[in-house]
Image (cartoon, rainbow, N blue to C red; front, side, top):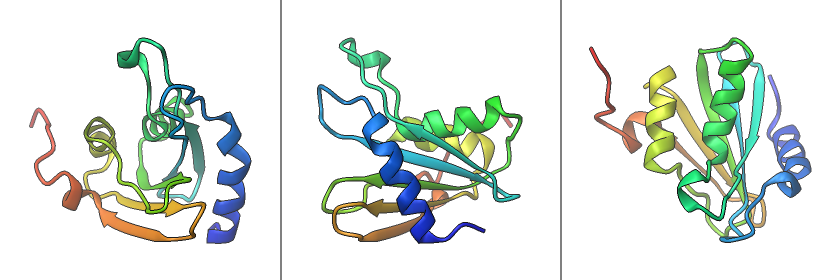
Length: 129
């Protein structure tokens, strides 16, 4: 199991890789599987705004690319004063792999932390069943 200190260090190392020239809202996300493996992602903006992708989706897609569909937690790191929750699209993507997931968000600048059950943020996720 990774410590919060190690997560912060990992996120701080990755933050410069976020590409946010339009919003200057850089985000690092780390998807953790049930077995404790970590898969990072950063947000990548595009001048055609609809092509922008959030860090949370990059992290989940990274885990899936590497053969993991058992997402347990999503850690989010921003440089904002308050921790931020994932957007609606990211909530739905996370729910695809675990509607019971835990979301833990941190502010790198203030050290503040906030935690939610995904069901709190997306009580009625879309599914085909």
